[in-house]
Image (cartoon, rainbow, N blue to C red; front, side, top):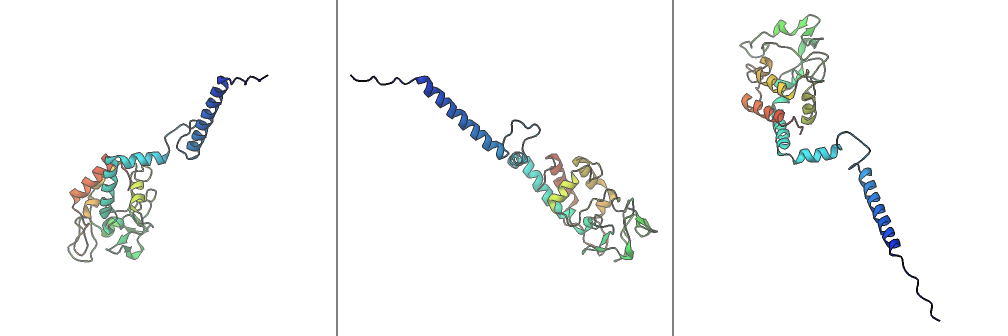
Length: 220
């Protein structure tokens, strides 16, 4: 007598296939979560890596970051850096040396201990080499908002200039207004005899900063 072959239940194969598929999906999901690509339990914005990729793919963002990098030829020039020092002493000259007579920032950026900025710096340049330059509102940024440019990379400077907590509560558009209209900023293009002006026309600089602001203030 020959024994009959046992019948295979198709439902068991379907169940096994479903379990294998679920296991594969779970493993793939775990991989994405571990890599920070996706997390279904976490709210909030998408991962910074994905945001960076999206920004890099945006032509406007790329143009804005490139514009800011070019504008740094002005922002990191001694005519700008000298009034935005790392310490509390202003800098002078094309080599950005500490101001003589131990002049210091003071609480409001106007000087201290009787050595106030406007004692020597009038509202316009004097006529001869090596005499104090001048422009309206001659001062440093105040003690509580130092706005340091000295020794900053373009990216660090960009992050500072678009941060209201570090830029005097300005929006990027208001930063553009400042560099377009502020008398002390404009002085950098007319620094007087014996001083090197910034190496870019003012209109070109303002256009670069406007491109940066209009693109969402991306950083290089």
